[in-house]
Image 1 (cartoon, chains in turn orange, brown, blue):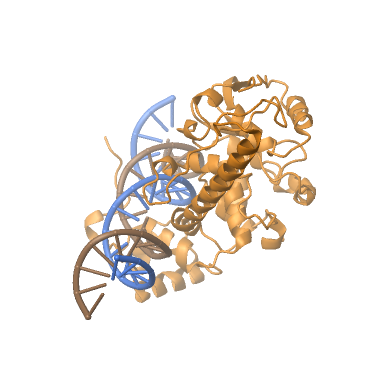
Image 2 (tube, protein in one colour; image 1 turned 30 degrees about the horizontal axis):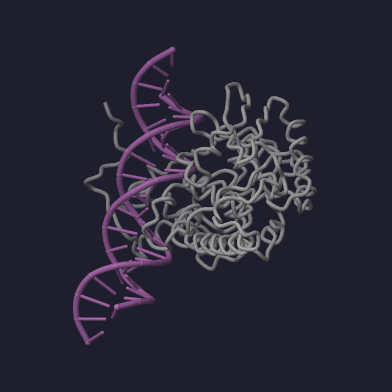
Length: 344
DNA sequence: AAGGAATGCAACCGCCATAAA
DNA sequence: GTTTATGGCGGTTGCATTCCT
């Protein structure tokens, strides 16, 4: 048995809103509010629209202080950073960007950011390939794909396999899922722009307290915003912008923030880990052999963390203190068992 | 100039969580 | 405890516009 429809589908208007409809809805809400019932609202004001449609129209378009288009580099960075951490939780991401709606961000991501990113990734791959080629030529190794030796910077954390260049076209099967994009972002070091550090405060001095929009969210999640006093410190900690994601056996991921390395408010972790982002089909970027080297955790159940991903996430390729970070990880997550992949 | 392809964005759909009855 | 109604969200679609050949 299906659910009763929220409105009489036959008698509601669909499609673009007319200026008259907008005006009606806007003036009513500004004067009387929604009355706590979107479904009843259209009848009250004589609109032949579904209540849900009214709600959407208000939230995405008519609401005061809505910004459309013109995303800045900083906003790009925030979106990418949050996407790494929590996936396609657009409403949460939108809550950190005042004046932006989840729909806007979602559209922006799907139509532009993703492509921008793919272009960047392609560039990096080419650069990596050519520099690798040069090095191998110097060493006289005939096959650039086979390392001349295993004495790379960190014997425990092997270089990820160099990917074949991906043609930049609209047919990119590898990147059709969010998880793959997340992976890519992480591989890129978690930072979208080469030049700009993520600076949340530059965007929103009240970060993360866009209270008008997020208060209910935090309330709902039983999160005490005032407890995020450490946010200020976290924001000043330029070392650590990214959360560490734990991938569970069932394909979900939980968020684990390294102490002192979080750019996210206290409770944020709780908020997203209670309803972790979905991750599917992650293997293509790292290869099966790397993926098979896993970390066992216990968030109640045995969870699997992709070592390669963890490496790139918590140990940037040029990190000299990788071991320290690993130790820190073990301190923070004593239940984590690291199994280092052997030399390739 | 015309037609097809690509892009951007508003709006819809369907599912899930939760409050109310 | 169960059912129902509603709000909220993410994914997807469809259309208008822009770009390219």
